[in-house]
Length: 113
Image (cartoon, rainbow, N blue to C red; front, top):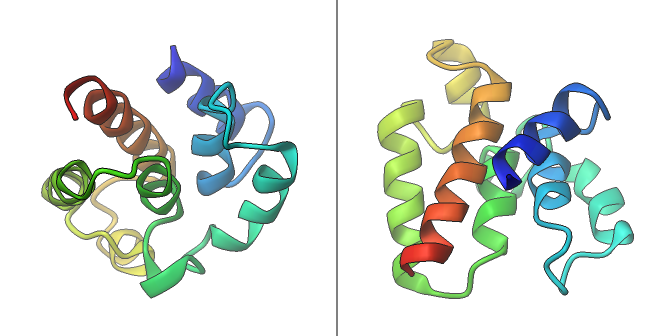
């Protein structure tokens, strides 16, 4: 369900990638509407270290370093990079797929981590 909520937020609510991942997991007690609003500054390659905003948001939602590392490695394996501009330049996967991937990895990470 969170993956579908993330895609809906991206496609229908027209939120950016970081906002969409946060919206999908908003029932999580640490995500407020203000957090989602502020995440507008993390899309389009503007997240820390130039990370994909979707990945940045997903990493923010888990505290376990092992889970974070596994998520990052798997994201790079599938997207080709963890940097937004590199992903977009390579055109390996579109932004909507980054949203799907980040949400999916977060679901898997929370279930396994």
